[in-house]
Length: 447
Image 1 (cartoon, one colour):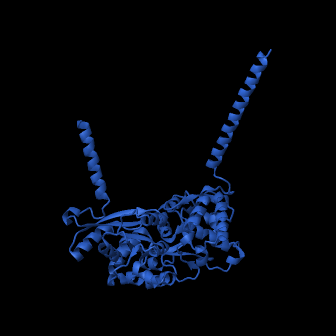
Image 2: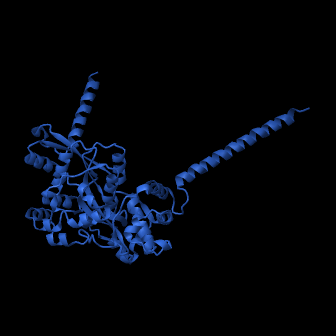
Image 3: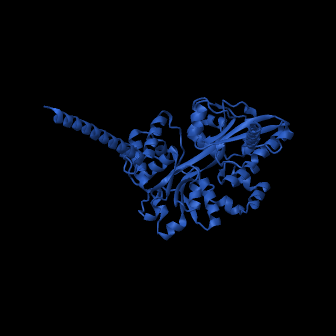
């Protein structure tokens, strides 16, 4: 009985540590009192969690009330969308991509934001770009957080050693169009229908392999087109690609390139910047490029869902992320490009001090084209919600992942079928044997 009591105490103690660890304001929570706890829902590795504690201090100083943060993460926009649309997420503030926010807005699942002067630090060109696509009202529900491009991260050392011209290959590098054996099984793609489809359809454009009526489509038109004819072409291209792939990933691709377990990855610019800088510590030369034929430019931002129980506090959290020093801390930590205007960050002494503390040269930091791409480039298309075609696109993606490079069934399905055939043949042989025995018995005893 005593052992049981001790076990229960250990479990309860462990749970208490777990609960504390989930709070972004655990260090001084006891001194603040209970206060409100807001739940922040964000992509993995997409914030400097030290800023969560800073938010609690900032909020209490500004509003005179204690607050705590419960910080939880998701892997893809689609996971987040499923939870919110199924009313299966008890959250107050969420960060997601623009097309996902558009989808939730169209379903009346967002609350309007109470914007103030601290939110005026955001690059107005982002609002202009999203507003042109989603309407002027979109800005009322969305505050940009990070932005960037979709492109290709690659091992520059391997490419140079093997004479592979990555810019000439374009998206074809992901299909190993150079036909170099060194790249077979060393290419990664995103386990994300939107990003992989975008790469696939732009690859077809690059190869002049689009059906005739789509050849004049812009990159933005192509990455959002769900015509069955075009979708099937992309589906087959993605299946054909699988013979060169190492696999699909969401977050570990950058680590695989740093460790040289892979040499090419379909990557978001922020992950690429992180990987390039980290790889230098291991004397691994990585680089990133956006194919000339076209690409995706994306904008992630904060919003408050209608299920939020603490909208006022959630609005304050969004305001806090727009402060220059907070934006710079998050930018340095996660590697992505902050939506706060570059000029605001460049002219803030505290921001420059953060860069110096992290051993960045300010001029190089702000001049890097990967970090600050031209968001008005007409070859950079922005994603929009698939709408009624979501289910069809999901089925297509599942077919791609299940298929082999030849388009046949995957090995595990083939194995099951073969096993079934073997069992069936064995059953037939057993039946034939017993029939033969029966006939033999009859012949033996018939007079």
